[in-house]
Image 1 (tube, one colour):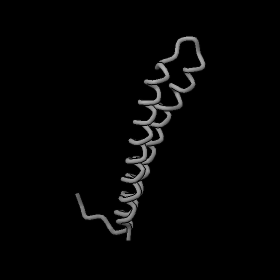
Image 2 (cartoon, helix red, strand yellow):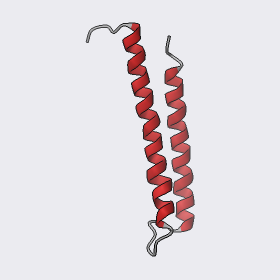
Image 3 (cartoon, one colour):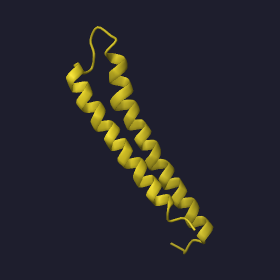
Image 4 (cartoon, one colour):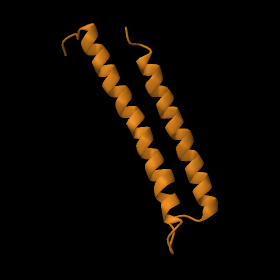
Length: 77
């Protein structure tokens, strides 16, 4: 692969950081919002104690992904 200009490298970094950050948003939606809404139904996906464990894990994982995306953006020049 040919060497990319600095501007192109920056754009690739921004796209990668955006993808990782959006992945974190998806994890929040799938691991927190969906089970939370299911608690309102007659047959929830998770019991409340499991929901808290899964929800906290998803929030932590999402935060880690967000921090990784931010650290990738620090390399921009």
